[in-house]
Amino acid sequence: MIGLGLLKAMKVTLRNALKVPFTIQYPDRKVGIIGAAKNEGKSTVGLMATQPVTAAKAALSMYSVPVNIPQNRRFRGNEFTWYEDRCTGCASCAKYCPLGIIEIVTSPGGFDVQQGESYAIDVFDIDIGRCMFCGLCVEACPYDALHMGSQFERSKYERDALVISVDELRQALRQPSSWFRPQFEERDYDPFRDGPEDDHYKTGRHEMPDQETLDQRWVEDR
Amino acid sequence: MTTQVRTEPITVNLGPQHPSTHGVFRMRVTFDGEEIIDVEPIFGYLHRGSEKLAEERTYVQVVTLTDRMDYVGSMLNNQAYMLAVEKLAGVEPSPRGVWLRMIASELQRIASHLVAVGFLIQDLGAWGTPLIYTMREREKILDLFEMLCGARITNSYLRPGGVFMDAPEEFWPAMNAVLDELPPRIDDLDDLLTDNDIIFSRTKGVSVLTPEQMLDASITGPMLRAAGVDWDLRHRDPYDYYDQVKFERPLHTAGDNFARYWVRVQEMRESIKIVRQCEKMIEPGPVRPDHDDVPWLLRPPVGDAYAAIEHSKGELGFYLVSDGSISPYRCHVRAPSLINLTLLREMLVGELLADMFVSFGSVDINMGEVDR
Image (cartoon, rainbow over all chains, first blue to last red; front, top):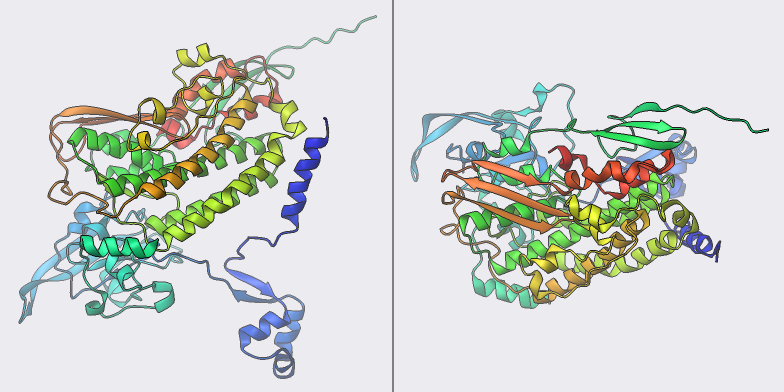
C-alpha cells in the first residue's frame, strides 16, 4: 500500500530523533553552571559565591570543558617513544620504514661496563610529516627501544617542525602505545589510564607467550 | 495546434571535483534535454602508482600500500595481498591467524557495505539522515579495528601467514556487543529504506543490466548477484577457511539499482553470521608462523602467483611475480571497482540526469582503487 512504507520509515526517524546524540564534542564542550561547578571542583552555590564571573559565563553558555576521545591502548599515535639506553643504533627501523623517513647517524662513542662499547646516537630524525604510522619500524626494533606513542595532537605551522629530532625524542613524554608490545598488555598497562612510563626497565621485553599461557588465557576469556 | 520544442544535444563535463562523484572522477556526458545520450568516463586523477611502488618495497612493506587502494575495505585488501604472498612463497598460515583475519575481513565487509548503502541513499537526495545512521554503525566497527591493530582505516593488520598480534582480551566482549547491536540496526535500515515508496520509485527499473552483459564485461560482486548470477568466490573457490563456515548468498533477479542496494543489505546479515561462526571455531595458538619459517625479508622462489578474494565490491585479485629477490618483480591488482565501472555507459545511456549519480553510486566504486 502506498504510504505505509513511508510511515514505517518515519517511525525509525522518530525513534532515532528521541535518542541521546552520539556525537563527541571534540575538543571541548559547552556546559552550564552545574557542569562548570563540577569542572572547578565546587558546588553550584559555591561557584556562584566565589567566582560570579565564571558562573555568569556558564549561564550564558560561554564556558567550555575539554573533551577527550576514548582511545584504545594499541592506538598508533604520532609521538614516538624512544628509550635511548636500549637503542644500539642498528637502524633496523630505518631499513624497515616503507617510506625511508627515519635518518640515523651514529658514532662509536659510549662505553658501558656491562655491555662493552656502544654507539652514540647523533641524529635520529623521524619526519612525521611524511609518516603514515604503519608501525613497521616498531615491529622491526629488535631491542624494544622504539615504541609508538599514544598522542595525536601534534599539528604545527611549518613542515620542518614536524621532524622529530633526537633531542625531542629524549625529552618527549614517554607514553608508549602497546602496539606490537604484548608485554604491556600482559601486565595491563594502559597509557591513557596509567600515564607515562619513563623507566625502560619497567617496560619489559617483547617475548612470545608459551602455549600453556595462551591456552589458559583462552579458557579464562570464555 | 501543436507546439514543437526543438532540443539539441549538450555536452557537460561533470567532475573531476564534482561532489557526487565519490572521488576525483570525470564524466563527459551528452544530454538531450534531461536524457543521457552518451557518457565518456575519464579516470586517472587519483593515480598514485601503487603497483610501481610495490616493486621497490619488501613483501611486508607492500601491505601499507594495499591499505590505501580501497580505503573503505583495507582489511579485505590486506587479505587478498597476503593470500597472494602465501601462495607465492609457499607459506603455511597459522590457523588462529587465518580465523582472526576472516573475522577482520568480514567486519570490514559490513563496514564497506554500510558506506555503500549510505552514500547510495545520499545520492538519491536524502541528505544526511540515512548516511549518518550507517556511519554510526561503521564507527563501532572501526573502533573494533582500533582495538585490534591501532588504526581505524589504514589497518596494516595482516602479515604473511597470519596477523601481527593476537586480538586483545577486551576485543571479544566488544565484538559481541557490536554484533548484538547490528541486526536491529540493519532492520532499522530495512524499515527506513527497503520498504520506502520513494526509494522504490526512484531505484526500481533504473539502470538495468542483464547477466549476459555483466558476464561479458567480467563484472563481479554484489552487482552480478543482483542480476541472479550465483557467483561468490567464498563459495565457488573457497580461500582461507570459508569452506568450514555456512552462509547464504542473497540473490536478486532484477539487476537494477534497487537490487544492488538490497543485495548489499542482506549480505551484511550473512557477514554477521560468518563472524559468529568464526568466533566459535577459533582456537588458541600462535597467530603467525615462526620467524624461522617466515623471515622478515621474505624471498619467495622465482615464479608467479594469483590469488583472489570476494571483496565487498567484487573479485579482488593480486598477481605477483617474483624474481627471487626481497621485493616483487611485478605486482598487478585486479581491482573490482575499475572493472565494474566498465559498463557505466550501458547503465547510463537512456536514463535521466537525476538518476545518473544514483546509478553511479550503486556500482559502489572507490576512486582510490580505480586509479590505484
